[in-house]
Image (cartoon, rainbow, N blue to C red):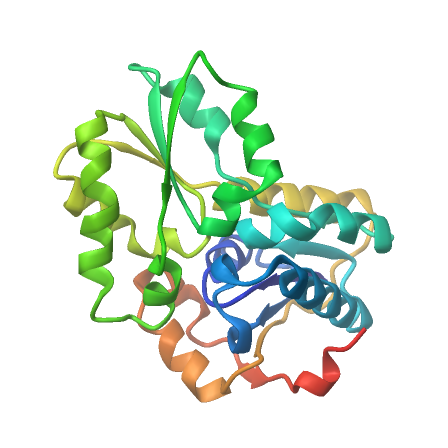
Length: 262
């Protein structure tokens, strides 16, 4: 079984890719919605939540863990890999494919405050600078607006996309797993052809590769979603996005905070 987690709905974009392309896998997802979004939370809290959730997923029998959150990956994945003896797959902005494909050698990354401020992100950019110009757009409040389908969402999309048009970038990297849920709105706000880079499929492929390497034979394929908030609310939020419709019949359960201690 592969375990996947995020602060909320965003990691479901990775779970969807796994479910579509590897239907024989059993999948277990945790949406830590009580603490969503991670993008503006203290690093210490995020690390503690990542430890607790990873331990719970391991206790349920997961043999591969996907940290389907850019912020959690940036702040906690190295520690998780030190503490847990199993493959742990992270996500990071797809700067490499964008940089290699860009004709004008100018790309943008949409990401949370914590991701842009992280050392891991700085190290990622350093591999491509100065041959490629990278515009890092801190999207304060965007993941939370997506999570709750906020009325502020159109305003925030416009706010963060318009400067990128002025910059003349030809590729935009989605540096948060929530952002693929609004790809169409982003393209509309840009008002011109721009390539969108989303690493969700690549992450799913690599997670499956790690699972194969373990030599485990899949049993009955089952998928379940757990939330640290209200299950009914999580299910309703999930149904707001077309991209997540392959998960519409997946059961959603509430996960008590007392079960997430390590």
